[in-house]
Length: 432
Image (cartoon, rainbow, N blue to C red; front, top):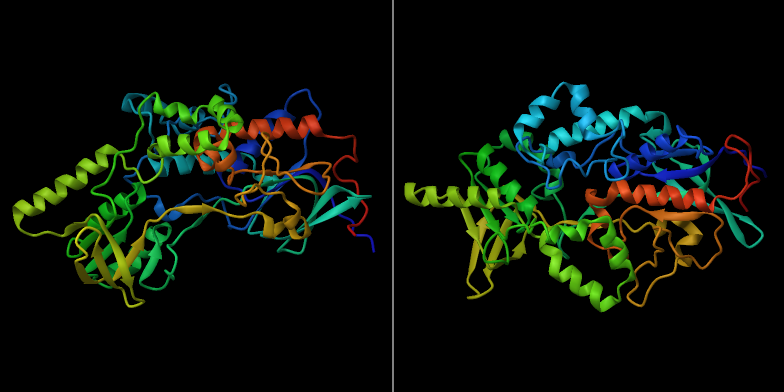
C-alpha cells in the first residue's frame, strides 16, 4: 500500500522558542540566494506559549535582551527584540529604562510577535503521535511523522524541540493541593475564592523565590512557608567572567572536553543558572521577613536547612530540620513544588528507531557536535535535538542564551548534509 505524503527537508516536533528560532532562521535562509529548505512544525498547544503559568507581571528575564531569537546569529535580523520594540512603539522608552533585562511578559509578547510572522510553517493544536522510519535498503531515507489530526508529513530531517517537563521529587504525586510551580498563575484565581490560610513552597531557586513573593503579595491573610535544604536563598552568579559559560565558543570547549572536566565545569558554574536567585529578589524577601519580625506578625516563614519529610494528599506537610531532626507539622491549602524541570526523552516518540539511538556508559544519548543523535541504523538525514544535550554541549542546552547560534548550526548541518532528492510536494514511496 502506498501512502502519498508531502516531503519536507525538516519537520519540527514542538514549537517553543527553540524551534521558533529555527523557523526564523529558515525564513531568512530562504530569502537568500541559496536553495530553499522546506519545513513544517507541529505544536500541540493551541497557540504559541512559553511557561505561561509563570508569567508573573513583575518578573524580569535573567538573560539579556540581546540573546533573543536572532541577534547572536544575525544582528541585522528584522526578527530582533529591538525591532519588536520599534514595532510596538516602545523603543525609546526601553532605551531610557537603561535595563538589559526586559519583563518576562514583554519577552513572551516578543515571542508571540515573532511567531505570528512565521505561522505559515506551523500547525498548532496538533500533536505528534508517532514517527516511523522509511527505508531505502538498509538506510533510513525519511521519517514519516503522524499527527493527531490524521495527517502524515514525510521528513528528511527531524528537529525535536519537545521542551522541558515539570519535575516533582520521587514519591510526590500531583493533586488538587499539590502541584508544580509551572501551574502557578492558573491556580491563583481559584485559590482566591478559597480564602487560603497557608502555603508551603518547596525549593530554593529563582522560581521558588518568585512563587513565595507572589503568594505573599496576593494573599495578605495567608502564611507562606518556604522549605529548602540550604541555609538561605543563594544569589545567581551573573558576573561577567562566569557568564562566559554561555558563550557560543564555550559549547565547542565543553563538547571537546573529557567527562571529568565536564563534570567539574557543571559544578563550578551551576550557580549561574540552577538553584540560584536574583540578588534583588533575595534582598526583597529578606526585607519582608525582617519587617514582619519587627511588626510581630510573621507571614513569610523560612524553614531553612530542612526538608518536607512527609506530604499528604490533604496538604499536611511534615517539615524536618536536617540539623536537629525536629519536625513541624503544617496544614497547607496548597503545597507548591518549585523543583525544576527535566528534558523530555525523545526516543519513545521515535518508535523502532528509539532503541537504536546509541547511549554512553551512563545511559545518556550520544549526540554529535551539530546536535544530531547518533544512531545504530544508518540515517541519510538526521534527528536533531533542541534540548536534552547538557551532558554533551553544556549548560546552554535548554537555555535561551545560545538558541540563536544553535539553530544556525542545525540549519547549516541540514544544508551541508542534504542530498539530491525530490523537491517538496512530490510524493515518496511508502514506509515499510
